[in-house]
Length: 526
Image 1 (spheres, rainbow, N blue to C red):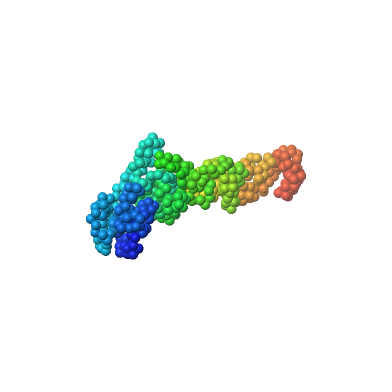
Image 2: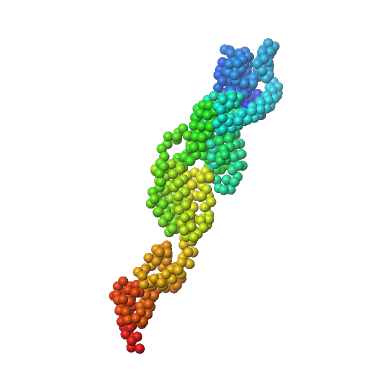
């Protein structure tokens, strides 16, 4: 809609004009009214309307003087239509000199005025398209030269060719980041960027009443940025955070995707926009520090103190212990402690990345040490590339948790698979070393197994408890020595792995229903 101001010292004339014409159908919107030329001039200065419909004879400042001062003093290129009850040729001549679109006599003919408005709408749209294309080319060149850090004078020359909207005041570079992208969504990001551009343009035009081209820049990392000027912020009392939040909401609702907005430092010259661009991108990782924040402004966080520290090693050890035992509730507990540490101690974004990646690689290393393949973890590709996905802190925690829980299951599965082969190696080891001071616990430690699980697996595989099997081995060898040697009982006890002769005799009698001496004597009688 093109903005229109009605100026007439008679209120009923202004009211009549408002009701006479279907402004929306003609492509116009009445945004203000004035009863004299002086008030109208102030309004024109403030809102720079596209069209002013004015009477000629008014107190303080007449219509022709209003047109002259608008053109000469304010340098505002508003179009004018004169409405007058006086068919004075001299007025018409002056009006033509100042580029007035039409001279309409009272009483106003609805069809004639409507036809004039429709013709003007087409002209304004053509001018806008022309102006937009020109601004687009100029702003793209300014971006290109600014990023390349060319001579400031070249940028200033290009800036001087822009329309008033981009001249003077302050500038902010704003980065728009889509969060929580899956790989499929990442593949389609090019299409989403195109959609973001359309949403941005529409949102800014609607929120700021801005008819100018919105300078949008697609960054090398495929995120989208745009330039905001002081003129965009007139409706927001010069503050950018409210506008940024409204734009963020528009994008988020349309794409159904969480969005972060990063605002670079304020600069007062277009040739310095690179500084605003750099600072906007430098704070993108602060989303991991500033919880529940969707708009981050460089000038507000630049002095934020963060800690370049490392997680307590006990947390890593505790996490790996719970993973190896596949204890989901405790895994969740340790993860909560890790993220609480990030928040409590204001971890710098780089320190958070280091800590997360260290945990990820510890899981991979554990699986590799068990001769397994880490690709069995379904979320591995997403987790090892998580920095590319622009995740929020909550989404990072969710992905990290899924990865660790899946890793715990893979470690448990590998342990079971390995144990099926290892159990026979273990049995062979026992048969070879039964004379040593071995136990279920020491064997489990040697073979990196949980002793309880090892005992269960041994019984399931061989049909006998480990302790009984070891005892049988030792007693059988003791009988062999009693038959073939003249070693004393205490010597035999030591040779088959008993540290106490009394305990050996007790166990021998329990298994054989006789003492070692009785067993030997029985053999001598035969």
